[in-house]
Length: 270
Image (cartoon, rainbow, N blue to C red; front, top):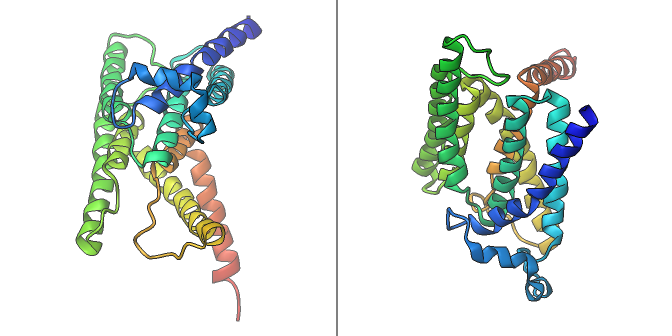
């Protein structure tokens, strides 16, 4: 039964690949699934012109990715709410990451509506628990969900506001603010802090690497406050780490960093 279930879920994940590609092509700027973007996967002229929207190859990659994630979520959490949400979240984060990298926008249908669904889920789960139903494998109390959304959206909004006040430039996109609020609604306020730490760490590495690559590859001179970094993918990575593995890996990483810092900096004699 285990093998059969994994096989069925893998097939379901595979069949969702074209719909993932459709969403990636269609949502930016439309916030709805436009039927005309279904033709992109059969367009050969676009592929010859270098259009990254055209052709079947991307959909095959999305199918493989979705299939593997579906099976891994089943292995990780069995047939459960957490496994289903893990697959949905991972696929959604894939869409968000690709769209944000290409267009520097995050579809509201995934951020705003995702946050509303997250808070509604916490209310429904709380109601079922009150009625003596078993607690679902993923549960965040409604108050924690609300606090997470408030902290997630409010913290990045304040950061963007201070950046505008000081530099007169947009420091944080509205899509990132709404996305972190959504993650807070699904995971609670403690997870928001962890997601920001992980995303900031990865974002700094990615941003510096991008600047160095542009300098070497395109001879592009770096100008402060002009290099735009899509922050959504890093938020998504932080969210997925906390969702699947909890806070413990972050605690261990911080402890290892503290030990390293104390041994090589504080205890060193000059």
